[in-house]
Length: 244
Image 1 (cartoon, helix red, strand yellow):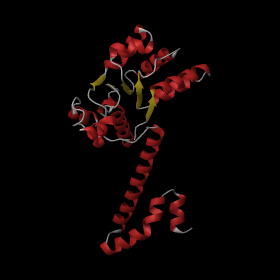
Image 2 (tube, rainbow, N blue to C red; image 1 turned 90 degrees about the horizontal axis):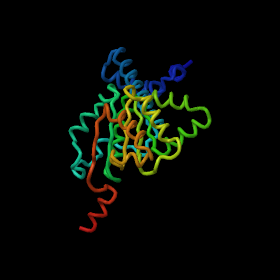
Image 3 (tube, rainbow, N blue to C red; image 1 turned 120 degrees about the horizontal axis):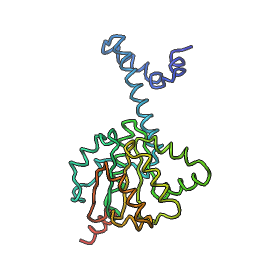
Image 4 (cartoon, one colour; image 1 turned 30 degrees about the vertical axis):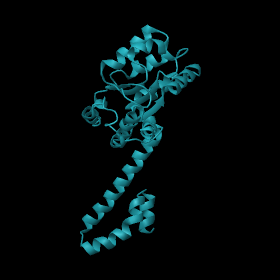
């Protein structure tokens, strides 16, 4: 077999694509055999890491890719930028702590949630992004088809579960109980990032039951970082600028 065929057989595709060109460069630089091989291996490692991160981002099902660098802290003065940057080192994941972001639509809750999720994927963590209503629907379907234990086990194994937009729709049927089960399973074992347009005092209205709302909140808030985001919507920022 030719060298490129051997490398491809071993799934070293980057090395197979680059070894000839890198050999020419190594001759000019008078690299040792070890340095040449190390450079090829490092290129292969970085490419595999890139593919791994991209695969994790795809599996996470983000609605869009956002980063912390893209966030306009000047527009949302109520946010503590240093606090966000401190949390962006992802130490909260190791402690199984939660991040709760509450505020009106358009203030950047989902942007920040996605930024944390993307960063976690880059650190090779298992991440899933869910709209709250879709998550509750999936849990309800799992309960009705006797697959709830498997669904709960999958969601419990995630390093980070992001639940977005809780409160836009009322939680009906067994949804509140199913969410309580999920939060309880992840309590002190895995982090949740949750965004909501409703302050905690109104969560009883979301679930139609003050007792279960308190039970869910109790577990979410116990080990958590809470952001009450105020301010105007990003979505109308440009429109506002047109009128001034």
